[in-house]
Length: 117
Length: 114
Image (tube, chains in turn cyan, purple):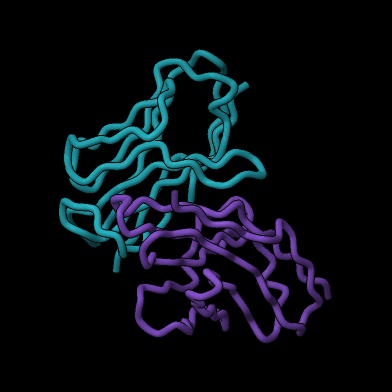
């Protein structure tokens, strides 16, 4: 069966510090991968998605970036965190092979709670 | 533009009574529709999905939803609420021509009173 991991589970960082959140998927190949952010009391905002290694699409311009160095690894980074980067970050995967189809549900990881002070 | 609207930001029920969480969508084509549940500080779990097969969809934990094209609705129901159902629920649409991207409703917080 497929599983998705995220770490760390919680993180407290000072403003201006760098960030690296990692997401890995097991039990599937060529997944589509997604990064979302959920601010307190609000819905989910899609940040990045990837249909393959090295292929990243950005949905929202900001000081975050994403990379996919391996097929089942998705990394969210920042060089300098802002207060507004605080939130709950969720990684998700969808089963397909190199393309985005309209009907594939996404499966979410447990999330990372980021607090920027 | 495609969108999804959850009509109630908060719903409160007593344990053992029915649950109704309302969702309306806007889409030019037949969309894929989903309900997800999120418990506090947890990821989202898929409850059920509609992908143009049967209009009445059964999901996990006794939940079901009915796709009504004439009303553009996809309401989530459960006959009898349990304390463990207390959580945030998201109605989600994947429009046919938007590259598979999820569009989330604003969420409905379900409270269950003993």
